Image 1 (cartoon, rainbow, N blue to C red):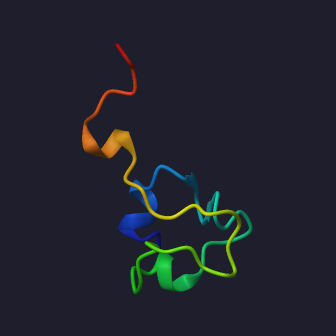
Image 2 (image 1 turned 60 degrees about the vertical axis):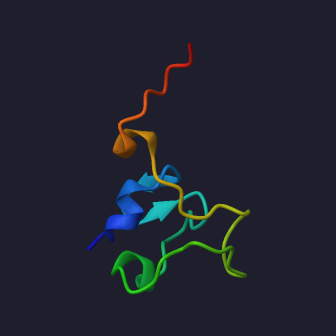
Length: 63
């Protein structure tokens, strides 16, 4: 099961991967037991949850 935060994050790559966890997102995030709001030692880079513009209704087109 994909956690609601994962599927609405701008860094989610689909399925069970994201830029922070390109091999596999940890179960605690996938199951919605924890939110990924702080950088973790076991992740790649400094990516943390950030709501995708698709879910905020904001346009990705700049004027």
